[in-house]
Amino acid sequence: MTQWSRGELAEAFAHYGTEVQAASDARDWGRFADLFTEDATYDEHLYGTFTGREQIRSWIVETMTTRPGSWMPSFPASWSVVDEERGRIVCEILNRMQDPGDGSIHEATNITILTYAGDGLFSKEEDVYNPAKFVTAISAWAKVAHEHGTLDDEDIAWLDAAMPGWR
Image 1 (tube, rainbow, N blue to C red):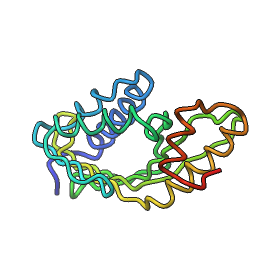
Image 2 (cartoon, rainbow, N blue to C red):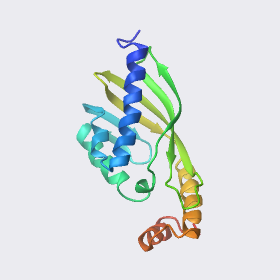
Image 3 (spheres, one colour):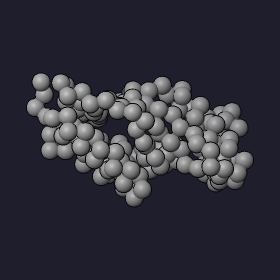
Image 4 (cartoon, rainbow, N blue to C red):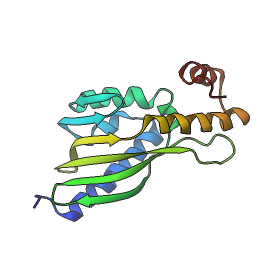
């Protein structure tokens, strides 16, 4: 049995979700790192493993303030499970793209495993996903955004370089 109650784990996860959205809304991704202990580990299957709050901060700020991360303003959880025995929360996160101009929703998902450390902080996050599904979601979103004139020249240049054939 873990040292934390189901209620504390659920409360910490609710706080995590609120803070992720607040960081996105404020475009202040540095505050995301404050959800983790000083010695936390963030295992991100495409970008690698980050050790320590400050490495997590550097990575998340860079990732979410540049394309394509900057096009994703919303990260709701579609479901979550509290694993009281292990002190973890396992959830599916919807990485939702901004409105491309017609109100349609474009998103890709990942499974996130959060390991709780107490005091509202997490000692580990692991994100598991298929990068090809993100490419598909971004490409579909970009086509609609382009049709509606919501991409600027720099967006189009980035897409042309990073995702040839997206049009």
